Length: 302
Image (cartoon, rainbow, N blue to C red; front, side):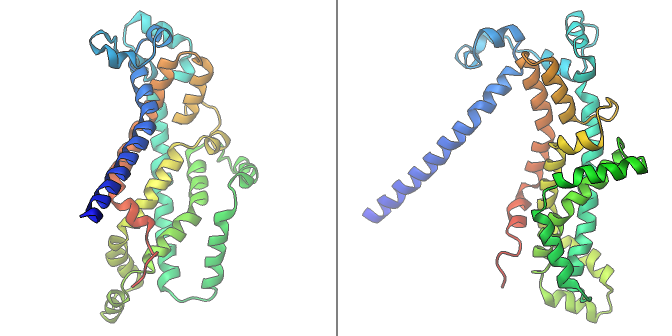
C-alpha cells in the first residue's frame, strides 16, 4: 500500500512539475499574443494581463494584423501607419516569397537524400564507406564558411538574388543531415522484404519507389519538419543570396525591416511575429506523429 502511495505521489509530482514548466514557457507567448490584438496606446499604457483581469473592458482589434498584412482598405487611420514603412510592412508578399523559397528547399533535398541514403544502405559500390564518412564529416562544417565562396560563384553565374540560387544553397546545406537521418532509418528496414523483391525481379528503382519510400515516411516527415522550420526561419542565407530587393524578400527579412521602422510599436511587431509562426505550427502539428519515430530511427535494431 505504501509503495502504491509513493508511486502515486511521484506521478503527481512529475505531472505537476511538467505543467508548471509548460505554464512558465507559455506565459510570455500568451502575453505577446494578447498584445498583438491590442491598440498601440493600450500596449504602452497598461500590461497585457489587464485583459485577463477585465476581459469585458478589453479593447481588442484586428487592425494590427490588417496593417502588417497590407489589408488596410480605405481606412485613412491605418493608411497613415502604412505610409511610415511602405517597403517593410506588407507581409502578405513576404509570406508568398517565403513559401516560394521553403517548399522547394524542403522537397529537393528530401528527394536527393532519399536516393543517396538508399544507395549507401542497400547498394554495394566501390568507395561506399569513404563517401559516407565524407557525408557525416560535413555535418560538423559550419555553413558560414561557405557563404562568401558560393556567393562569388553565384555572381559569376547570375544566380545572386534569384530563388533558384537560394534553393540550391539550402539544398546543399541540408543534404548531409538529410542523408545521415534517412540512412539510419532505411538501413534498418527488414532485409527479407527487399530480398524477396529482388528475387521477384524488381529493380532498385522499383524497390525504392514501391517499398522504401512508403516505409520511410516517419524519417522523411521528421527531416521535412527540420528543413521546413530551418528554411522558414532563416535570415542569414536569405540576406546573402537573395539580397534586399522588396520583390524577393522573405518574411524574416521583412520582419527585420519592420523592427527598424516600427521599433517602438510593439503591437505591430507582435502581430508580425505571430504571422510568421502560424504556418510552422501547422506543419509541426500535422507531422508530429512521425517526429519522434523519425528521430529514433536506427537507434534500436532487432
